[in-house]
Length: 170
Image (cartoon, rainbow, N blue to C red; front, side, top):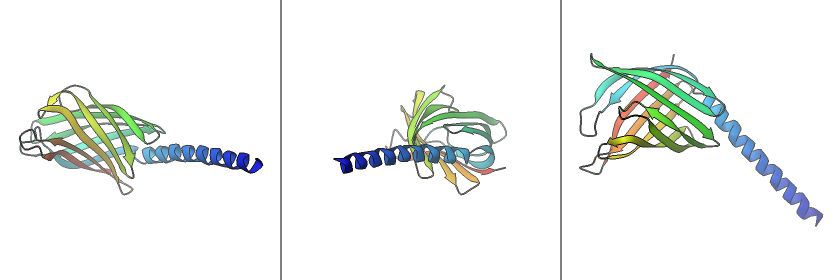
């Protein structure tokens, strides 16, 4: 009887430590993305359009349970787009919003695995024939971050990278 109580207490304690460790892991991960970022990449307005080369700057503000990325990407001579993503974490689960596709505020939902925050996007209006896409925020080494958006081409049914921006801490 006593050994059962001890085992249950140890198990409860281990579960408590695991929950704290997960939260601490997310806080550390989020803090590692804080700062100012700059880089280059490509953006496609639609899955069937040609990619446009862009240069981007972002400010990232983080807390133990949130990430806010705000910036601007410029391409060609006349293209300039404000971009913003706000995420809150609950353990390794993330939810928030994204502005930048020109359709209004999109919803974000997903989770982190390793250095990737994988998010489903729910656009405010149809984009490429539906309202769904995928965004991944990837920590690359100590001073890098990659933002990737993938959508499905409505004609071919194939996944197409619609944006990929590689950033370095400045």
